[in-house]
Amino acid sequence: MYRTARRFRAHRPQARLVLVTGRFSGELAEDLRTDRVDAALIRTPVDDDGLVVHEIDRHRLVAALPEEHPLAGRDTIDLAELAHDPFVTYPARRMAVMRTSVDAACLHAGFLPRIEQEAPETHTLLSLVGAGVGVGLALDATAELRTPGVVLVPLTDPPEVPLALAWKAGAVNPVLAGLLEAAGVGGAGVRGIGPV
View (cartoon, rainbow, N blue to C red):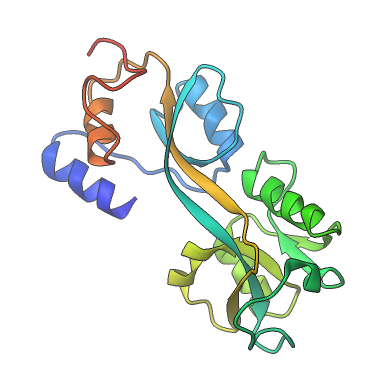
């Protein structure tokens, strides 16, 4: 997001770029359909009815463990080794794709996670893990956050969660093409943008 915002502002200095945070992917998809936002970085899969969804990256799930956890010193762990630990995870009721990804990964490993607490976003999730509330699953990209008391340990068979840039099909905002170009998705001729 940082690189995209800088490129966009450099090429479109008169355009107003407002970043909205605190929304989960399913919520952002609905915001796109109702024209509350023009573009969104979302985790997929989501209900993409009426949207153009362009995958731009994939991130692996990793175990987020309190630093005193018995497995925190390992190079890798099998997700099944956390079957009896309490979990901190994302809320189920807010259309959080990450929650669906976590639940699916745990089911694939042979267990349902015992949810100790839900967190509204990644910083809070990692802070709760660092405080010893439970373990969690996060994306490998969260290593940049360097949360005190938290150790990120790769999984032996890590599921990947796609990251996509999405916009409403037929969108006519005249600066959307510039934003997509800044994100490396394409320019004015990109699929799903109406006449500008």
